[in-house]
Image (cartoon, rainbow over all chains, first blue to last red; front, side, top):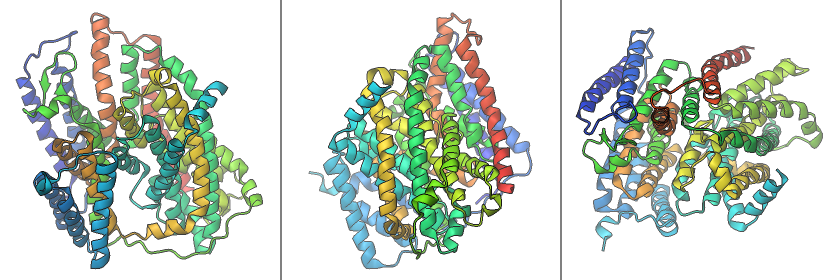
Length: 144
Length: 493
């Protein structure tokens, strides 16, 4: 993991350059009231890049520590996996599984309590979102 | 004003409204107690739960949570020396010292009473000054709103921590993200990359949940092994009425400071707490006792940070400008119910506005009740292992963002913002300017372009209100530096 904030500043500059280039693809870009649809995005990108360059040439740079990069990546992977499978597998199966795996990843070892937490938490949230608030949570394999 | 107060009392005099206040206070205290969860995170997490509620009930719930969250942060600050919210950091000095002396009940009792009085004072300020400010705001046109958006964006100077430049970068990121979608004047697609859902722009609520709640989960994973929260054990002698009465001057002084700073967009509860602590020490007869466990040292920051709440709601409700991170989330909640904060809110939904004002005062009283009654319970909640808490936050963040528009695109937006928030926070970039820019970016661009169209290209900065706001913007950009210096001198002394 890159520990200097220079890394993220360079990423922002690269993203700014890419989006500035992309803005030439805007269609129907005629000006209304002297300002075209490209004006604000380009001005903001310009300011963003200017601030990034200022930060880049300034010293000292912040050194960042990443105490548990693998655990964080695993956590992100669990979140992404949950969202990817949500539509196909469904909320009722995925949520307790997500809670179980996440809590285990974080070092929780009391299995019985964890099981109760996963099932109880899933059903409580289902009750609130689906039954009370009427949010149509994806049912996945239970979909009729 | 009396008529409006009566309208507010009438509006909230029903079971659902009172229940919403009670729930908000209880949840706010719980959120404040949990180290790592701030009032803004709590409000962001709770917003999805308000979809099916009436606008009044949902706002009462969220505003009560905001108020009680500021108090709740002091509980862990006193019990284990860890502020539950950033605004409770100054409470640690004397609150934790009292716990170490074996008198945590004195600190907890002082904290809840001072917080309640500070909150009530802030609510009174809100009731007294919102209406005149709203009347002034009614005369605003496009140039004034453009200048107002500029003024709102200057808040980032006090939200940027040590690096103003990083605050600006975060703000420009937010402004850039806000340009995604159809151009408001020509309908041109901007940065939609062929995704139809993005034509409406980036959904605000999922972005908010991602930046505050999900990024908190990722940060929490890193610190799990080194952040074990143990159950505290202590006795609960609370201060007598005589002891509390002796604190009237410091509570009044801090409440005034908190209300004034709260009205200034962006100064925030954390800076307020330090300034109140500093001023209480400066005017105390026994300044040498500060830091050793004196009740004044607990009462000052706590009354100050609760008085901020009422003050922060003034620019939010009257002008649509968020005065703090939590206020920015509250704007999202209002918009969710089709309500646009600003002067027209007073005209079209006066009952709602005055209901919120009176509800805030009632929330303070419930906060006092639950704060005194719930002390043993708060400690039990503190001991909830983060290994259970953080996954639950993650799951609620996902389900909550899905509930915004029943769309998985919104969930992906939330995940994207969660990762962006994590990266920004790791590299010491403040995340609040991103949210601020998402709120104000549209107002800024639309009103600037509208002003140009109206004036046929001869937009002038010399109109009185817009000129005053632009001058205020310059002052607002400079004042936090002065406040930071005051705070630093307070910390040093």
